[in-house]
Image (cartoon, rainbow, N blue to C red; front, side, top):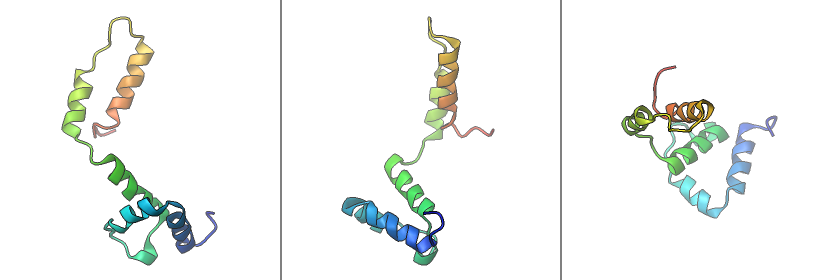
Length: 92
């Protein structure tokens, strides 16, 4: 599939997403022209539509309040904190 032209990839993707998703796609506003659009750009629009925007202030609040619970292993705590930090927007 990666060897196919970009227009073919986009057309095939839009054909397979179904009628409801196609209606959602028709409501998206893109910065690029139709013939310059990529599948990755379309998928990113769907992710933004489905997930929405992240409230960094709230995510940082949750991160800063997270303490290791009694009886919780360090590995579990570390995994949880690593997951929480992804949405905080801290510079890495």
